[in-house]
Length: 484
Image 1 (cartoon, rainbow, N blue to C red):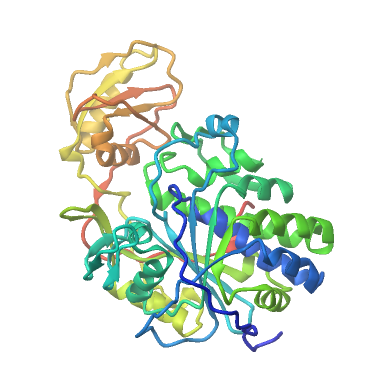
Image 2: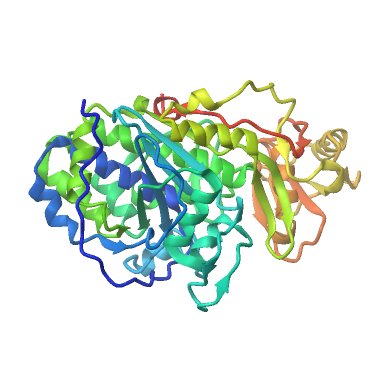
């Protein structure tokens, strides 16, 4: 197995480019497909196949004039971000897969992918989009105004300063030197998933998200392009919101890698070409990440598999950290995150960076139950169900009306939590106490949440408010997050 880093090919300097504004990104699927190209290159099909596609990559210069950067460590660090460009998605697909909405001009959760120096391990660290960050001094991408460093949500760094400010902010927060930058949109995501023949995912609970249209029954599913896009975009399928979505994206990434490495794609030049063309058609990369780097890295990873990969999310020290003018953020745990990023710098497995963890007494939530007002409705023909649900919620600390009523319909199968979008944090906290419930936004409903008890109701789980204490992140291998 080669131990030398990929060769660097110098490219002529070009004038600075102004990044194209994109809509709100869904990053992990583009990260997954980008990684799959690296894996696919291990087939050694030939330099000319990938070279012919190199021209499709739009080049950016995220490292221009950067000074005082972290010291280089061992291995390679790629910063993967994404934008949700939809230019090539048809109107029918927009409607079918809920791809409307106003542009955000910012990145959604970012990930650092570390390829070990011996090319036998890939470590993936997810950085939540709402992470509290402080930018270095920079020039605003839109107004040209000079800014001093200031607080910001991590996903907004792209809007203010494009790829360069994104890289600078991540390096400042992690002290990890970024070697390469890859930015991809999801316009080619559905085609890529279709080219590999679909990706297998599994779920023990029903997954329904009215925002994206995701609707999966418990079990194993092979998702094609559109359904796969819904799966990795869903934020409202359960009470864990973005953190739950990141776990699902990690599962999808592991399954995609497994699909790419176990199928005939690696040995079929035509399928290899089709997949790389689908991915590279929307990639923006730094000028030094080219054909030679891709092939050298790919050949070194011939034995790569899901068990060679490991996934985690940066440890969160405080949920719902309020910042004036910014809103609710996630504040990293300084001790746990430093331990994690030191492992990346030292080219160590992420499992060595985790400490002991206590068994939780119950799910942690952002809003305490005694701050959440609830009206219970019985959505079934079962006598007394409303009283039973009301009493169980009250016993768990929620402020119920103690006067449940009958719902308009009496054939509700799945328990529904109706909430005003202004009280979404309370709604997600309540959903954690009602496993399997469906969240349904109802503008104008007000501060009192409505629980419509369905035939699936079994219990109310006790929850605990998220305290400003350290929560260690879990590290799992790709073979552990995929389907059995």
